[in-house]
Image 1 (cartoon, rainbow, N blue to C red):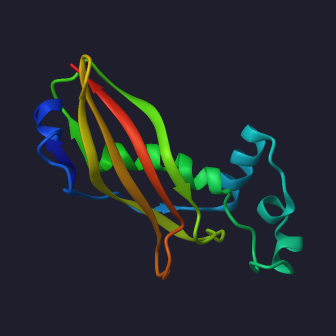
Image 2 (cartoon, helix red, strand yellow; image 1 turned 120 degrees about the vertical axis):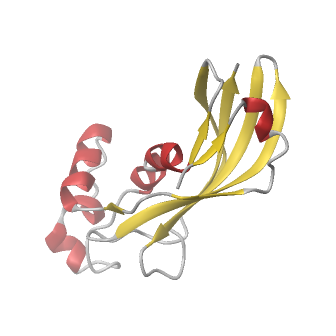
Image 3 (cartoon, one colour; image 1 turned 45 degrees about the horizontal axis):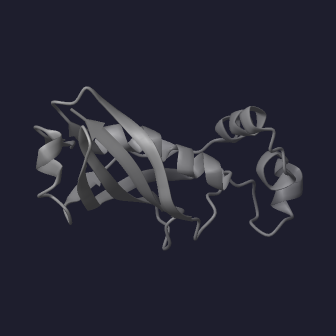
Length: 151
């Protein structure tokens, strides 16, 4: 279920609000290989299933930055702000990758609005997104994502 804010100003009073969870996304080898091709990061732990099977993780794993990039897919499923001329990614404050994502896993995002402030022309927010691995005990990624919602 998507959390909907009627205006950017409504974000200011919602700090601390748990916004919800996204749908699950399968992390298959073709997605990992496509990311490797897009970024020229062909390290064997990502793209060589045979070598990776004998490596420290027992299989290939998703790139940390692939996991991070998926948060851009998750956020629109979790939160929507109406009454804006545009929403923009402004950056990130902090990113951590506590657990690798093995090929064949499913991940989803869980988001909390952790900061909001008035800026010229809109509202800037920090949304902390935790990327969960289905059945996992530790998150794959935790990111403080900074967005601007302009009137």
